[in-house]
Length: 288
Image 1 (cartoon, rainbow, N blue to C red):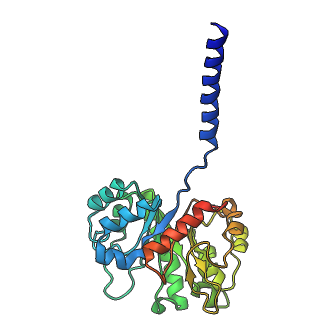
Image 2 (image 1 turned 120 degrees about the vertical axis):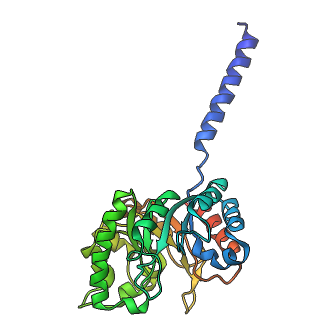
Image 3 (image 1 turned 45 degrees about the vertical axis):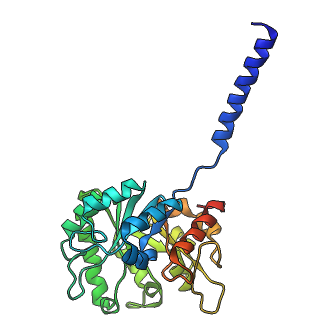
């Protein structure tokens, strides 16, 4: 090999090596999830197919469902819905469900739970979260019954490879049952996974990190939504409000975090615009 050939070959190898280093140094896209409840009105008017395509275009990789009923997700059979997800490169990691105790309820923890679990697993769920307790399910006896239901429901879910959990609002901290906060009672009396909604915890005046320290590993899912810097402390796009997500994510490993979902219950602008602002800010952030 002459000197000229040697230098050309060396230069080529150096370029490839540098390209390899540049490729390795390029940050990976974060696997950001979205709770689809944020887009409930758009789903109703435009259809789940169009909305999931828009969600995927924005860069979201995972979604969390809501509104399962009578064996269908957004009016689609599990097979139909699974195809829509796959066509858009999305994973439905988790879903929100009800207890089923309300009058007229057809599906939930106390109604057709085996079928709920079967359908959840068939579309790729790893988690099924009890989403909310209405006012008439918050008496002391209601909570005691629910703890038993959750523990029994966990056995059914576990056999199918599904993790049962609970998603909070603020009443679990502001209410007292025999002198204790319902949220603490959930942690003490059940083994379910906790999906911590950071906004509601902060709004209730609590410190999420204190719970992570006291109950390590119990919080595999988080909802991240920001709090506006206003007297109303209303919902805001992630990165535009007062919640220090950077500090909270320092505790992610201790909390047991596996997945997180953007959610904005109410948006002042079109919801698709709001979730774009949120994911853009997350992608720019050092956390997440």
